[in-house]
Image (cartoon, rainbow, N blue to C red; front, side, top):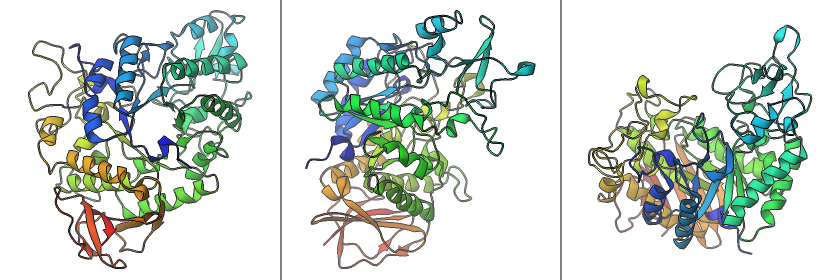
Length: 525
């Protein structure tokens, strides 16, 4: 039986504002992505995921949507999207869209109608409640981005509406069948255009108990979105899965289930009838530490095994500091320590060889750090500007972002852009960019690395060691998270297929040791 494409794929996340600009306004666009597809094809990724490009007032940079079925003019047009999709498919690259089911913009026509009167046709499309005595919010939930209530009082109708995020992002009421039907129609609109799947934003939040109970005292004060785990959501996901499965071509959905508990996250796979994949976010909050990673690998397998679920792995994304930035200074070193480059390389090996579907964040393949964004250029309400800095394409002063006289990019470039750019790294076989390309090529040619079983191996405490097996195809992976050399004994002689710290060369024999901050992919000799 052939496994679905998304199990063996490597998915590359594009944050469109910061990927590539073609019209000189300093903001990336769909044509920029289309013109840079050659980079993704050369790198060897199988799918790209676009963060939102829908029409939006941009209070949360596209995650506040005023029209789910239109492209914001900042990024282009529906024709531009169709051309991008066609060109990606021509290169054998799938395309996944961000879908934001929990909320809309407060400028969406649905909400404009909903807030107009208590008896408005779409009043019940959102969550409205009376204030408690003394003008208190309807419950004690806390919003993300700021320690404020998840409720905003609207004087037009003297009621408050629910928003788990910004006040400009009112929550939809999925308990209303009309809302569910409308959001299914959004999925159909894009599926009919040929998209291959969706990344579902905070999808664990869509089902809500109509009584809206207070959060328990021991967790009150935490953002409710990281606590929300309502059983009603699972019925909604099963109906979404039925819709996806009605389309040909193995359409899929990966969920942003931001519950920092592997067992709770695993329930959103259902019994193989809910999400196809769900992000595991513990790694993006973890240090570069072997014991922690061994625990993640083992516990993820255990949590998903009885459900037949398939893991995902991610090191960086548009919501958290880049992993090279996070690994700087661990355990107690200067932030510019040379080891940060070696750690980023070793982490690439781990990401692309562990059992599951890896998601790469744009610029990860360049080893980028977060940008240093001065106070007068900070724009994001969640403080995430540093990881969203524009991708440097070349070594010139503008790094491939327009011509002299064009608008400056919307955010500053990351550090080292004069050397950490696509053109410079592509010309250097020893660069981290070439390491990613080699890893993707080895993965593509190995059934074991794409779909095989995984078994953790005994190794010294600072070393992560595991074996991937599919029939006669066997790969062993060793990742040293320390600054010292360690011996790791294996059964029989092995050849080095990829070393995180070496340029491409004829495979050499494994000597029985893994060097400081080194990662190795091995095959039996």
